[in-house]
Length: 100
Image (cartoon, rainbow, N blue to C red; front, side, top):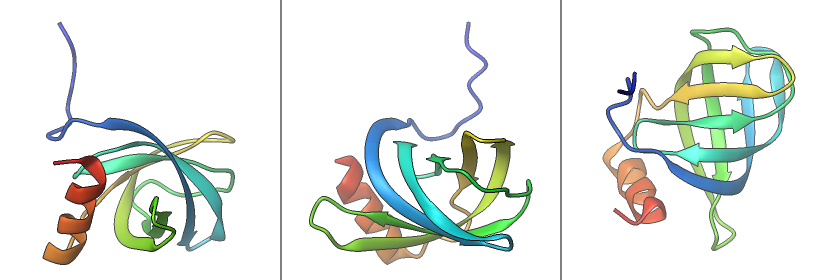
């Protein structure tokens, strides 16, 4: 039995990213991704509940900008981000990236 709380299945990825929040911004990598959120492998400090702007580099080289809320934080490892504010265009680009 699993204790899965996510509404969307996550896909393992390895994409370059950068993020910006109240404590500044840094480079990062996205390790898993879904329509509902992702895990951002990054150094830097964030607070649960903080709103973050995340840019994910697509395979085409373009950047997809998303906004979300930090759901959990693991010091020196990274943080979970829930995409709270997806526009229909952002959702469409995310679906394409995920192959949905």
